[in-house]
Length: 194
Ligand SMILES: Cc1cc2nc3c(=O)[nH]c(=O)nc-3n(C[C@H](O)[C@H](O)[C@H](O)COP(=O)(O)O)c2cc1C
Image (cartoon, rainbow, N blue to C red; front, side, top):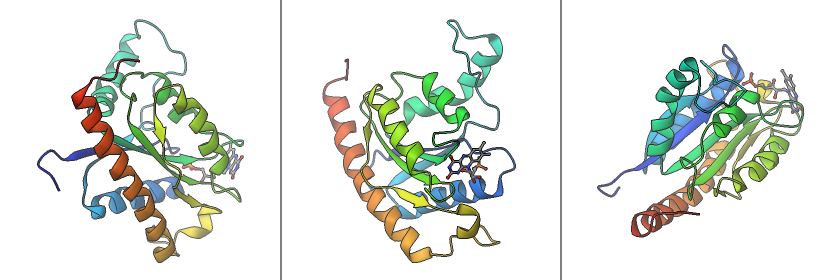
């Protein structure tokens, strides 16, 4: 690893108390740490969610929540969004966290680990690609997807297909590393001002 570590924020918006969502987020965090190229920060945006309505200035309560989240997004060189599928789309807590921020996302890469029923959350991911394109984000082609997630993880919170999941994660992290290194270098050379 180079001196200046790449910082990766893993975002989860799982319903509080959800065993499946927490298992996926925790597995993602461990895979990211074990990959060995990123300083990993798990950002849970559902624990104390931001308001759905965006106001300028934010209410005191929203400002307090933003203080906890915004600096961590700003510091990140890369993101993984751990995303369930709700009615063929993304969970509201994740979308709110995205909407409350702008420059924190700019010229950075986002990868996805998705989960849900038969679709494995992929419809939510495709919708997120549209949202992130508005925020000058590069979304990775390859990600990890867990269909029928409640069957996919064992009692210890580990995926049953450890090899397949790990291989998919490695492909995603290889792409994330290339993009995060390249874009960090580019941002340092010339600030991104769209
Ligand atoms: C309101 C609601 C809508 C859902 N819609 C879908 C859906 O459209 N497609 C799907 O594959 N799963 C759907 N699911 C299943 C969730 O993706 C699944 O239960 C997932 O584990 C929820 O993640 P969470 O507990 O981390 O929030 C839905 C679940 C809920 C509660």
